[in-house]
Amino acid sequence: MRPSHTPAPSTRAVDLDALPGYVMRRLHQIAVAIFLQETEASGVTPVQYAALQTIANQPGIDQRTLARTVGLDTSTTAGVVDRLEARALVRRNASPDDRRVRQLTPTDAGRALLAEVIPAMQRAQARILDPLPAAERRQFMRMARMLIEANNELSRAPGELR
Image (tube, rainbow, N blue to C red):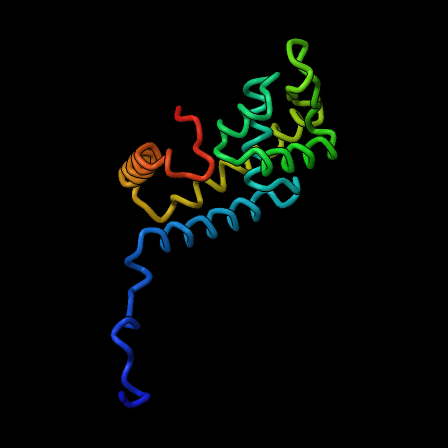
């Protein structure tokens, strides 16, 4: 029998800061916090912003395509769209070709909110990368996109690669 102070072999120390998944989760937390600080007046979340911006970029996009484009599952996307619609930022209309398909368009209020929030969103993005030298910012983004592309199909909600 082992003394109680001797750790079992399976409980060896692991440096969390050396784990890419842990580091990315922490970076995501920080990115969300910065985004929310910058956009507080708008009351929009990063996911709502991504959905609204995508709808504005592609008026008439259907919910399934929106989900794939922003890398969300369809039920999460439905909830996001519900919240945007409740705030009168988007309109959901049945497709003339298939009544089961819901096409999304931004409202005037949605376009106005985007015009208001884009400068704050851009400040947030700059703040996230500010600690890196300019050349390393481009390198970080290139490597992050490379990881996303290489691992996209492993996601619970693969996104459309651009």
